[in-house]
Length: 410
Image 1: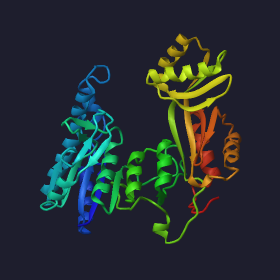
Image 2 (image 1 turned 30 degrees about the vertical axis):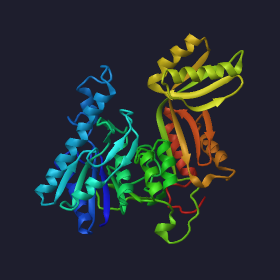
Image 3 (image 1 turned 90 degrees about the vertical axis):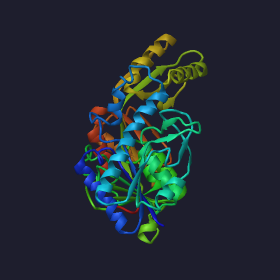
Image 4 (image 1 turned 180 degrees about the horizontal axis):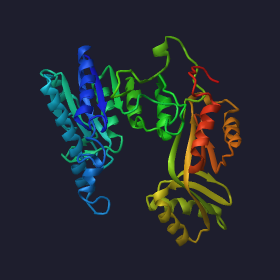
């Protein structure tokens, strides 16, 4: 028995017409003699009645103080409804199908409600259902503790459900269907010349995802990488094959291809830069700032530390909270709101000496001020103002020739 896992996001299952495309993709895989595990998200997006955020509105979240356990019980309904609806429509078209919750499909998690960790996936029930059904539709994003509590596994959880099932069943591949045609070299809403990548490695897409590319959740990619199961990112509205995520581009080309210098340009918006002056006992005050942020559950990023200053970034919506903390501690500070972290991502930049200088020069040529910068072996980050995002992203995209098909380093 050969198995393919197909995951469909909320917009893919949003309406009857959209679900017709879903069913066509399922039938195409069945025609190739596969058994299909279909993982679904909740139907649509807010204000659709069964979307996750719409369900949360029913209990006035986040204003009302519902327990995290009860919130998981509530929002898990969205995926369960979606699974039953799609299975019903498959049955109407004479496709033998059955719907399962995440728990019934074998997902065992810890009790970290709203962001549970998967401890085990036991596909025994799924394999049993394949004796009488060709398609098993599984509610994504959810599981169950060993004591029977319903849990959800965080945003992007349906992607993680899909690759976890792929690993547990040793599936031939995992197909993630979205409303885009594949993985792009940049956000096409920002960079008009962005193009689709035909093949990327697990490492490349993990780096892009961690820097703001939202097509596939990085947790899902890591699971697929560990099991060496290829992922295809495809459009629900097209029969084209989209982007293949795999261990090596060698697997599809038949020859060794050098790593790309830069794979893509990613960005994260709605960021505030915090610049805190440090006086007196430097080490004490540096540590004090970060302990205070952690105690208040304020995530910090993009950290630069010097003897006189601590610079870091936080989400825009937590700025007032952070400012209040700094004032209570008596620290002088300055803030810059509405910033963007733009990243040039590529596993081929390791030990290449001029990548950083090209990034800086490209932005300088467009008069884009760099507020902060950092780099790793596979990413160069710059913090810029949101008003500079479009010229900055386009400048970086052009500098590294990403609108052209490139297999070797520039």
